[in-house]
Amino acid sequence: MFENLTGRLQDVFRRLRGKGRLSEKDIEEALREIRQALLEADAHYKVVKELLNNVKAKALQEEVFRSVTPAEQIIKILYYELIKILGGDRSNINLGVRKPGIIFLVGLQGSGKTTTAVKLAYRLLQEQRRVVLVGADTFRPAAGKQLKVLGEKIKVPVYLEGKTPQEIIEGAIKFSQEKLADVMIVDTTGRLHIDDEMMKELEDLSKRFEPSEILLVVDGMTGQDAVNIAERFNEILPITGVILTKLDGDARGGAALSIKAVTGKPIKFIGVGEKIEDLEYFYPDRFASRILGMGDLMSLVERIEKNIEMEKMAKLEEKLKKSKFDLEDFYIQLKELKKVGSFDQILDMLPYVPKDKIKPEIGEKEIKKFLAIIESMTPEERRNPSIINGSRRLRIAKGSGTTVQDVNRLLKQYFQTLDLIKQLNKGKKSFFPFLR
Image (tube, rainbow, N blue to C red; front, side, top):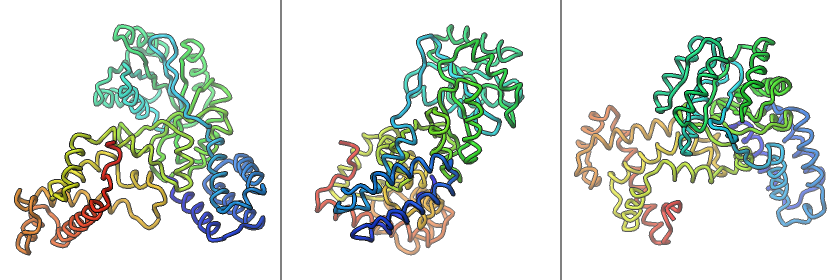
């Protein structure tokens, strides 16, 4: 996420850390480079100006210059100013007091509105909510069918009955009440561009049904255009928040940095992948940390706790403590790692990882190869990898559709991991702190 922006900022920070004492000129130069990086990331120029004016005012205070680590002080100032620009605290979803609570998703075609409706439904299901999806987009014929197919995947009822959006929503309210649903998520009509007809329809529906949330779905890859779209929608509709999609793609970050400051409306969720579960609550502090290259260990731990079978990992830790770690255990570790997320998503959450020097797609391919190779081994070979000689390596390579070099690379990785485990055992370190 935002590799270019993060890389540029980290270069600035490295230069600052290389100086024992900072002069006013050093700070001015650093802020000039940060300004350039933020503008290239398509952040709104007024937002950048306000942000850096605040950073400069605090960075030029005497206690910063007198600090033992002035560079770290400036990074800290920038971190907290970014959090303020991004909205401060996490903005919770409001389901209102009525049952069902009504959430309108609005936005242009191509922003990912329909798939976001399903992702939001899945997210609320995990919070023990009873959800109904409503297909009120009568402009795009395939929208209802797409919603139905995706809704069936997560076992959420989808309501599509009616000719007009108003008829559909009225019927959906009765249907949701019969199902004792807590919330209905309405996928509203979108267009390829903002027009008066669409906005009038959304305005009328909003006044009639008084949804507890009107969430604008915007494509995070469109940069400044996303901010302009949010500003236009906010002028006409009482939107309550924003969902930024496609932040796993080539997003530059400007939209995320600018939307709250420009519209006054918080970002409530971000889309970080194509899978149903790849919709996250937006935490300004965690987001600022990622932008600055400081990682997001809290989100990583939450993913681990949510996806990894703790009992299985506890058993594995007991084996690790005894240095009895074979390829069966290595296989389990790789499988559990895949549940947490893609290799690049995990890297994005780790602090100070030089992402420009790592190719995540290679990591993903390697894991798939390693799993196939281990699956092609006999139980004896998995339990005792030291018996795997040249002829066995050739057989395993053919059976897994890989090469002998791939098998060698796996075994090298395994034995290096085993050596690391033995070193950790000497220091009595915990292998999986999140189990505590």
